Length: 396
Length: 142
Ligand SMILES: [Zn+2]
Image 1 (tube, each protein chain N blue to C red):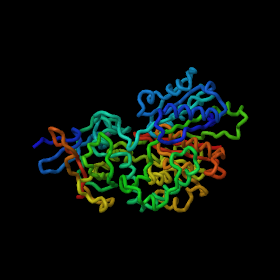
Image 2: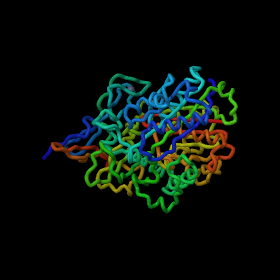
Image 3: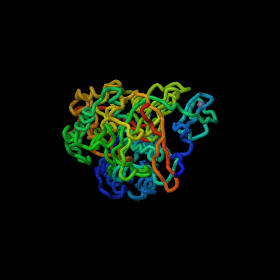
Image 4: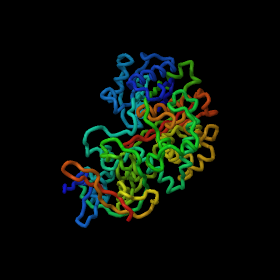
């Protein structure tokens, strides 16, 4: 399959700006087009990530952005895959290019987020697992993050000091990132005073909900080869949007029970492991090739899970890897050099795209104070509620 | 006294002796369990049998993980006023080879819990409406 190249990347800074998501998306789209030196008229396909909390325009995000940028006849797609929406949009744009249906595609994700806990959509809907878990159990997203964090403590001896060390690291990484919402260094003493939300996680362990937008301009390798700015091009080596394999015996949001392992062989890999594995296979690369990774730190503890899922270390070894400094800027494989969700908060349909914007910036060598020296291969990964995998490997 | 009703119909039953049991689905063809049952067909892709039988799940299991929630969730959680913190436990059932969530029984000392300990199912009030006391299943230390 022919390669797809990132020609442009752009963002609207993350924050709590209180404006309509379309404004952020248009800012990010225009920034990505300007970065690519292209105009909106050059775009042959627009793929967008949906937002569920901004009415109908959010469900038809592709046409919403196309209209706001000015109708020019392009085809669009509008994807929703929860936190993985951005990766599905990138995948959809890439497929159009690979199929030869366009040379240049624009990918956009933007969100305006409510304050506090995410809740399910309104109404009384006992058929909806997302409604059930809130109504019956009060199982919020942080409840699940806390269950995973406590599991690390019980199974591997992780401590809340380890979780705090993730926060300290990411807060330092994000200090100089102009698109980050929180640019403030955290220390252990301050973290220890943060209120417990869901034991063992404190407020500062859990990512906030944010407004923000990110966009990418993708092009075919043939189109990119004709351009003068080839030293800035970043290649998309793999995109993984796999779903789980039955039986999925690891508790996943929003379900209140796992699959049963009775009557079926366990899959070769856990769902999270399989997300990265599919990307490594497609790219022909492995964990040892990574220069950096952007992983979905919905909680500090979850970042440690990802170290193992992407193969940076074995099961139960993430705390030791963190303590070794390997995942800190300057270490062997910095994780979340952008500052991660700890510094951004989550803007759902934009977040997976923002991860790839960071990979692009790093692989171009344009990340300034947070630059990973000699970055050649970057991986971004996350998981969307209801069984969506999301992983991108980019190379220079 | 107001009559009791389960928070969701068909998810669990309370017995006369005060105990409670979860009701799931079981596939006669491949043996898999599902909770909640939700649909009438088996979700094992290697099976796909058209029917699931109602089945009572094990009422005892071992603790896989646990937490307590110190902030009121958004609706539709029926948070009491003033807010009452509550624990949530993930419990592994041996025969079913699955993990099932439930709130922890009121008064459970979360700090004293550890993975692997024996838990058992019970039922407690979740909230009251004008005409019923709404009940939910919970996990308590066995
Ligand atoms: Zn079956």
